[in-house]
Length: 432
Image 1 (cartoon, one colour):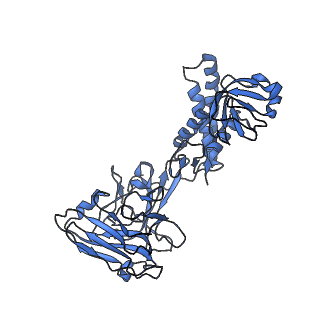
Image 2 (cartoon, one colour):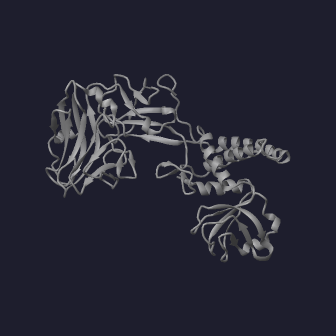
Image 3 (spheres, one colour):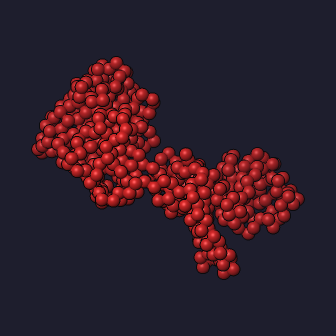
């Protein structure tokens, strides 16, 4: 369920009567576009504020102001210089009321303005109660080869997402090709400094095809304590990895020079996957959840699994939680350690490319019809409001002001008709 920024702009253009899309029929130049379909249009069909937008070919994504036309004679219009010659069979759009960039800005703004009625659902099960590790399920990556919250040494960890080769969340970390390790210490997550002097239990879900290749360690700057090796056999550890002895328990120094939890891949020819890393040490009263992208860091509901890797529903709802201003979730002492949490809430909508906000026409928003009609109506409100500002001619501004009321009412009607189902509100616990 996603729609590109370009397709949203097409919907908006159609809604406000400013849509023309066609394909060039002959070779033009860097400053001309030829299309026989335009011969049917009078020359004054092109307004003083017309822009084109090339949507295919080597000039894809370029927009230029149209200066003069010869529509009736040759179906040609003249524009500011495109990067290369516009040949035949190139798709393009003409925008006669608003520039393509203005529509883009309106849609991006509208995506934020419709929050509440339309939103991106967060349904996350990557956080574990009592876990001191940040991103223990290896969900946060940059370009699929750089872990956001872990440090790699002598090996490039890559994102594992093949069926059967991740255990928790949507990804694991793949280690192969050379000896090396991934680790998390105070430099990656400062909270780990509070483990000084504590007894810690570091476990993980591991898959490996080679014996004596994959193991864990805890290091406090003086003493390194190792787990047993994964047994190999191209299999995952059991749901509770302690049953396979794939864990390490250690007492950290009261004055450690570092606190580091490390995953070692020790045979270059082996292949290892690691997932669901957990460090448990007594009761941990806070869990960092800002990375989930919840609006204002506030969940709507929080649940806990009844058993390890439970496949049964329903999970048990947690009450009396709170999220502080630093993005930490505080759970009541009645919540047991070492179980997955399901955190449900809303996220602001935006246009994304490779998971990050983008203004590229190929960027997508997690909306589909009919919710995109809400987005288009809200974008129209933005356009006409912006064009009614005092920097435009009074007559023109009055015309635009007349459209604001229409589109506000239309946006209201569409929100009531097509708005998404609200999530349950938190009333007597947490922050709603």
